[in-house]
Image (cartoon, rainbow over all chains, first blue to last red; front, side, top):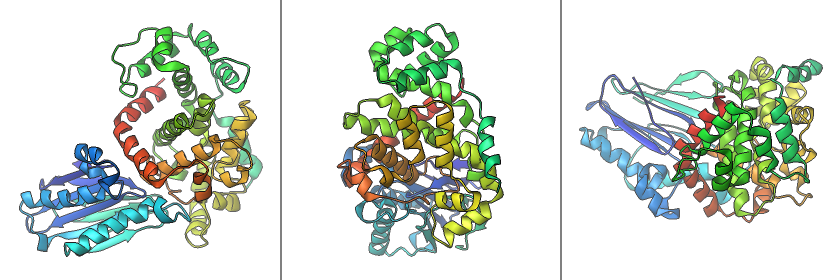
Amino acid sequence: MNIVVGVGDMKVSNDPDAVLVTYALGSCIGIGIYDPVAKVGGVLHYMLPDSEIDPEKAKKNPFMFGNTGIPLLFKETYKFGAAKNRLKVLVLGGAQILDQNGLFNIGKRNHTVLRKMFWKNNIIVDFEEVGGTVNRTIKLEVKTGEAIMKVCGTEVRRIPWI
Amino acid sequence: MDLEKIIKNIDSLSPVSSTGTKIMEIISNPDSSLGEIVEVIQYDQSMTANLLKICNSSFFALREKVVSVRQAVSYLGMNNIANIVIMGNFSKNFNTSQDGYGLNEGELWKYSVSSAVIAQGLAEKRNVKNIPRLFTSALLKDIGKVVLSNYVQDAFKEIELKVQEDGMTFLQAEREVLGIDHAELGAMVAEKWNFNPEMVFVIRNHHNPINILIQDNPSIPIIYLADSICMMIGIGGGSDGLAYKYYQEVVDRLNFTEVELQKTIADFWEKTKAVEEMVTLSGGR
């Protein structure tokens, strides 16, 4: 059963029948995490780096922003018995239009916020494919932790992260 | 690749209805008043019914239900009414899949409506005069993809190689491999449909806005920026992805800050569900 993680959305599940899917990551970032012991997985799809531009919106929907969405993704899996030291982490997205530089490069800024937070919290990324000009899709099978990615227009690839 | 054959493929598009043609004339002609649209549509029951459905949808979130076109005009203003009528009259050609671009049925329409809605929002803040003209250009700028999709599909490996290895934009690669790109084809469609020359111009140059900065027309940077925002969010994201050129100098013409960019993206998120409803209703005629 596919559970779709929309844009600015997060889903966590330990249902062995569930497959978490998020489509068409452009400059947005998709993070998938999985604990192979507790067999719980989660996917976050955030659009913007930092909630400081609109704290009200972040209250309504923290998953829109990296700085508010990322901690909640991890915390939510802990509720299902996940342990930080066992979590596998994959990161996809952060694409950019050609020659997009500086502050308008939302893809790069989305990635930067993640790197800062992961570094501060000692989180190691097991698989990452970020940047470029492509749209990416993630599928994560909760039962096994098998994950696949699809770059629109190309073949599906298995993600070597477990 | 037989260029003539590709261009001939324009004829396979569904023709614009006589109502659609009349409405485009009203929008294109500077001497017409948008109010004339009401006269054109008021005797067309299905069009009126659909118009009212969209007016009463969550996108406009009216407190009271509108039951007549006149009431709809007074609540939503003529610009919105014109835009809704345009959507209803031009959605038909967008409802197939565009496999060459990796787009499922309805995804190109969703992209087009989203981009037009964002463009309208930006235009209203900048006091652009003819909103329906801008909305229509933003809505129909990718009609060339409908014509070109099958050819892109056949030559996809070659196009992709030029993008990934040679660093070309998807548009350049289309032109290099197929002899024509979707923007040029879209402009040819717009000409065939007798669109106003300014709209043809915008459609032709929507990925190359730098060509036309000499013209003092905010519509061009606005449509370009709205398109860029949709690419970043990944709405209806296809196999051409974000492989187009970004021109900061075009965006700067609008005095558009990066904070405003982020706020526009966040605001659009709040409207996602309502836009999706409008996408369905406007394509469902």
